Amino acid sequence: MDKNFKEGQFQGTIKFTPPLSKQRYQFIKDLVAKYRPKKVADLGCADCKLLWMLKFCSCIEVLVGLDISASIMREKMHMLSPLPVDYLQPTERSLTVTLYHGSVAHKDPCMLGFDLVTCIEVIEHLEESELNKFPEVVFGFMAPSIVVISTPNVEFNTLLPGVTSFRHPDHKFEWNRAQFQSWALETARRYDYSVEFTGVGHSPRGMENIGFCTQIGVFLRKCPQTGGFAPSDKSSETVYKTVFKAVYPSLKDEKYLQNTLVGEVVFTAQIIKQSLLNHLMSEREERNDNTTERKAQLQPCFSKDTRKLGVEKSMEPFVKGNVVYVPLKTIFSFPKVNQLCGTFEKLCKLIAGKVKLSSGGYVLLLSTEHEDG
Ligand code: SAH
Image (tube, rainbow, N blue to C red; front, side, top):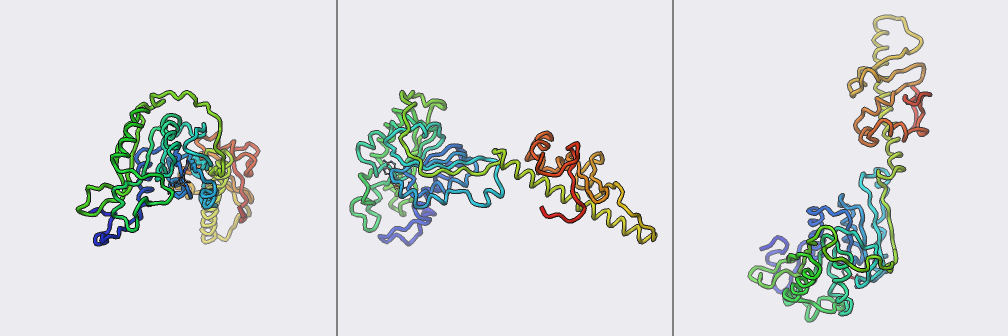
């Protein structure tokens, strides 16, 4: 008994757990985890659910959806927009999400250069003329490294309650395994791909011979570079219309890197300052205990605590008057700052004009008083 099908539930009524659509999306997520593609396109993306799941996959930098229905994409496309947290904590990876209105029967150069193209429960919605063009568009023109196509296995329909003809009124056909496999094998042969068949939605015990409820073909391009098939018209004209585009904040963008770095530098300097002031305070209290004599002004002073934080003696912070001097070298020695800017020169360049520095530009100045921000 498979784990996705609840025992005892098969008495003419089949209920998949998790739902079949979720199992199909999970199948794609697992494939993404295995191959780690950077550029992924979902053809026939409908309400963008799969795209939404995929935006959390850290390897993906370009995510594209295509559908013949602009209105179905518009319904939920805003869930693909960056969230406030994405701006507060930009990540190292860049991510652009774009939705196009167009048909899988038409070529558009915006679909070139993809690592993975998914086409989940779409081919059965295509008219015969569209289906005839589909292999040339997807395998010949787009020619991604991997193509995943899923479609209903009509042999399973007898187990689905209420299904007398097709599973959906918009389906133009539903194939059995032999039909899908012969189409897929011929397509793979023509465009120099290999194909493996699998599926999701197991049949109940004793009925394994009817196969999966959803049949899936995973196509891998044999030739890594050009697919061994030279498309004649890769310079075809733009026909798809952009309906949505979101560029996620990323540390690769200098604007976000600068903001994040300045925030981190100020935060680090505040920690150093606090540690130094605490140390001076305890020293002063010790002196007060031993003698009534008090020094009027704080002298340049080094803190043991800051040394504990990994600060070298040569770049120790100090206090003079009511100013705390924190050498940038000290701040640079903190792993998070170091990681963000990579080199000391870049640190100096990115924070210049954003924080208060000494005239030489290598020491950050803070007031001993409490400062906001
Ligand atoms: N992939 C989605 C939706 C499947 S329904 C999912 O797994 O949930 C099929 C989708 O294909 C619909 O949104 C429909 O509008 C779209 N579609 C149908 N013909 C198309 C074509 N020629 N080009 C692009 N999308 C098409």
